[in-house]
Image 1 (cartoon, rainbow, N blue to C red):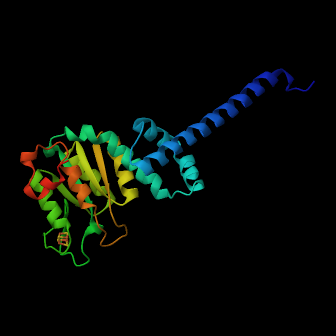
Image 2 (cartoon, helix red, strand yellow; image 1 turned 180 degrees about the vertical axis):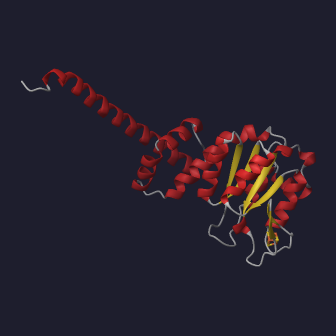
Length: 232
Ligand code: SF4
């Protein structure tokens, strides 16, 4: 009889519980993987709340499972952003446009951009060298505050200054995912629009998606004629 004998039932119970928890997590991971693959292939998201909570809770493991089954990290990030947008859509639609803001990354600008840095970000001159000028003009016509972000702390500063209830964050996948998470901490309803080309300079926004998102919840008569084609 060893010194551990009296504790044997407890040790066995702990061991069994550990195996049970491990197996439950593994099964949950596979269910999430199936739902995610279905969402990627069909564009149809089932149980978005469950999926978002599960994917974020098991993020490390899910990324590993994704890689194991031949998916890229970007697929994982994209599905998180899509889930978040799906869940936020209704709440975003009821926020008056005067309480919404759009944040663009400065990498969208032309290399020859003549804009100068101001206290409220880069001041676009609508020079026509990139599409930001025209996009900004149309969004402001809708009633949005539009910012061109010079650095990561800038968004927090503008959020504190203007307290928007809803924001559209444009950028690369990682920026958008992190931006949406940060908005959650400030109780802001965020919609993310991922750039159609990535990089550090002269990137391209998915303008169709920017405008489709921007007009959500806005009555058709208030939408400028250039954006009417985005009404669904
Ligand atoms: S349109 Fe605006 S952001 Fe684009 S290059 Fe001209 S000043 Fe810069």
